[in-house]
Structure formats: structure tokens, C-alpha cells
Image 1: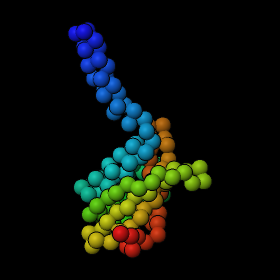
Image 2: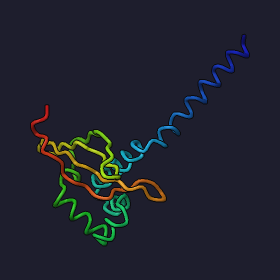
Image 3: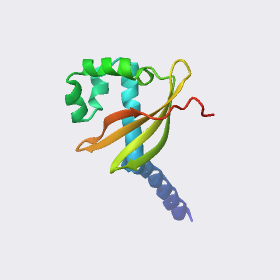
Image 4: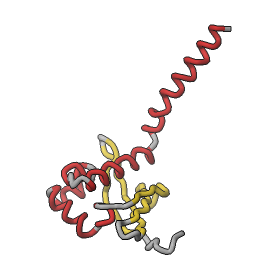
Length: 139
């Protein structure tokens, strides 16, 4: 009886240990982590770190982390200083994965952003962001 209890406890313990590994293999979890990390870098004005989450094509487009940071501050201020970030659907469109992210800016307005993701040798990278339809009318 005692041996059975020990085996059951060990099975439960090792089962729990495997859960984070399973989550790490989930593309949506990985993608959301990349986006969260980039937004955290923007909040800290760490443009070099934020730039590291961009795909090579985005990096070559802007050249430097400073140029990238200026573009985000001017064109995507809701990403640079969000009040709230909520992950929505991950969708495949035309062969690409797009993570939908609902962001509330400092003024309380909501914006749907569509993050186009690219799988690289070292993991997921952001390959562009588009503004979706206005969402201020959402409840």
C-alpha cells in the first residue's frame, strides 16, 4: 500500500514537472511570450532589447534599434506605453501566423493589433504589426 502511494505521488510530481515543457512547445505560448517581452522592453525604453524580437527583415528595414524605437513611439504609442494588453486569437492567414492583441492605451482607447509572426532558428520573431479595426465600440 505504501509503495503504491509513493508511486502515485511520484507520477503526479513528474506529471506536473512536464506541464511547463508542454506549454513551451505550444506556438501560441511562445508567440505571446515574445510579444510580452517586446512590450516590456518598450516600457523600459530598452529599444535594443525590443529590436531583438523583430525579424531580420524588420531589422534591416530600420537599421538600428534607435530608428525602430522612434518609429514605435511615433506610429504605435499604444505599444510603447500600453495601459493594458490582452491576447486574443492566434490565426493562420495566407500561411502566416497572426497573433491578435487588444491594447488599451493611456487614454483608455482600445486598439486591435495584428502581430505577424515568423519562426526562426532560435524561435519566434515579430515580422510586422498592423492596426486592426477600431475597437472602441467593444464592450
